[in-house]
Image 1 (cartoon, rainbow, N blue to C red):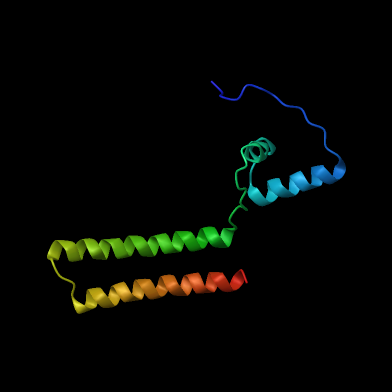
Image 2 (cartoon, one colour; image 1 turned 120 degrees about the vertical axis):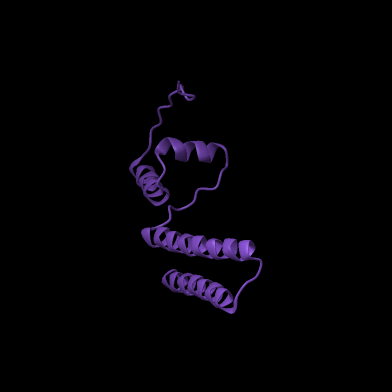
Amino acid sequence: MRERRLHLHIMLNEEESKALSMLREKSGLSSSALFRKFLLNEHIRERPNADFKKLTDEVNDIGVNFNQLVHVVNTVGYASPEDLKQAQLYFDRIIRKLRSWEKTWR
């Protein structure tokens, strides 16, 4: 059963309607969700763009690889020079990705 059963009808002028549409598009939220956030004085964030999603997926993949490396090191009990070099490469790759993404947002 739905938690929200009360309906609200509001009237907007053209300017207000355009502002609402722009907020909906930027945030990815419905009008109802936006109004609820306004009422509760919650912060409304812009929806991350496709580049940000791609970046977070890539960083997550690197993190998974790094976690696998750490698991092996914990199992064996030590880190070989090759393991440490691989870990450094993972971190360097993350830094490069973040810096390239940052340049697109300046």
